[in-house]
Length: 176
Ligand SMILES: CC(C)(COP(=O)(O)OP(=O)(O)OC[C@H]1O[C@@H](n2cnc3c(N)ncnc32)[C@H](O)[C@@H]1OP(=O)(O)O)[C@@H](O)C(=O)NCCC(=O)NCCS
Image 1 (cartoon, rainbow, N blue to C red):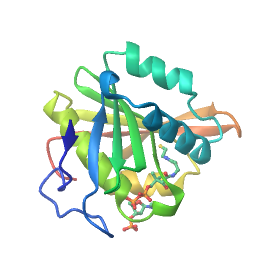
Image 2 (image 1 turned 180 degrees about the horizontal axis):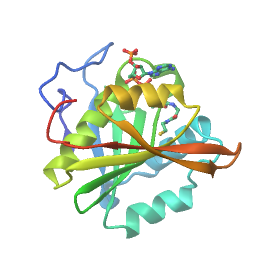
Image 3 (image 1 turned 60 degrees about the vertical axis):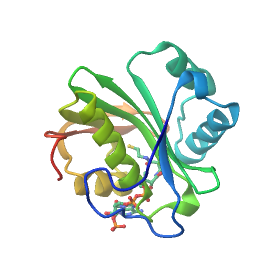
């Protein structure tokens, strides 16, 4: 069911460019092959160890906690996605990416605001994720959205090997 894109917490929508973008949750029944293709392609161009199509489809079909959100352009093209789990009172953000040509336009911020708002409505009170220590873009994004570094997981990532920072945000029901 499409969610009207209007800034989840009453903040002005931070998008530039033409209106009509929207955040949409993918449900198993509605998952079109083209949407899966778009996520797999964006994963592959964004990460050195991307999720495979098999993992993605399994998550969509078998997991009760998985939520997959897309941010679509006016014409329907997928510009960004976020895959997360809502487990009891915790939102776990597993992967998130924006099309390279559309980065730095506020899309990840807008998508995450919607994801956090929907997760809070589903009972999540806090959020967590892991990020490469060198990923300054993601760290800037999450810091602006109220996350803080809580711990380090040494050598967690491969290709290349790198530490993971574990971030948390408490109080999903408030604006950062
Ligand atoms: C990280 C990522 C999702 C950010 O998406 P985005 O739509 O460009 O982010 P936004 O435009 O909402 O940026 C919000 C803030 O994050 C920070 N930020 C985003 N990109 C940045 C960059 N390249 N360098 C430094 N800070 C950056 C800034 O503080 C920015 O605010 P500003 O533009 O007003 O300065 C995007 O760069 C991406 O897809 N990267 C590859 C995949 C990835 O690393 N995902 C995260 C894994 S946890």
